[in-house]
Image (cartoon, rainbow, N blue to C red):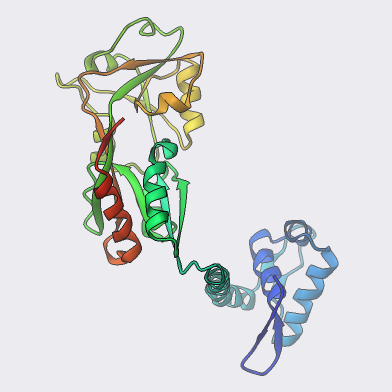
Length: 308
């Protein structure tokens, strides 16, 4: 990024120098910073020295031969500059989109895998609101409500129930039957279906920072007869989860749509007829509700709830 920022004292600071400084506060290494920004190490060193001369103090402690450390002055400048720089980047992005006729962006995080199944929703939204940009990304298993609250997404597509007082639950997009994933050589693999009672005979996995009631809706902690369904592993990615299933270390329940996207020869998908279909709905922070979120909710309502 090129450009200048004028300070209160009348001096000129290169925006690129701010970027170099903030990147160095993360990497704490001149070589890694240079490689990340695709500049020479000399350019990084020059930018930091210029800022230190302008401010009249050192930003980094360079006494170590390996990594460096922020000085108190460097910490103060980093804490002040980070939000300013983030706002500057956001302003430039908004200006870029405005030049293309786009006035706002709605960011959607997806807990389910079936983004293609929901293309009709995205198409209708874009057709009705060409002035708005829609971004749809896969959401992490790890603390998705925390990421929603942090402003990393505007809307989350999540299974229900969601009973958080600061979150609004919007319309349901779809309801999905349940299946059990087992390895092809598992003792259950040849069955045509599996009961929830039988599921309790085998270990499962979980994700960190799961809310108990939310996890229980996805996979109950107990069967109807009161048997515990044990979680023995903690996973943070879909690949890690399905790999544990494939090696026979666990079995795991899923919404049935995953069978379209994980067509794996070493995995068997068994219907779970005594588990209810899992509903997925729009969820957003109540205090950030705006015209874009309301417009997406209206699109979902107009298309109705699907059963996949």
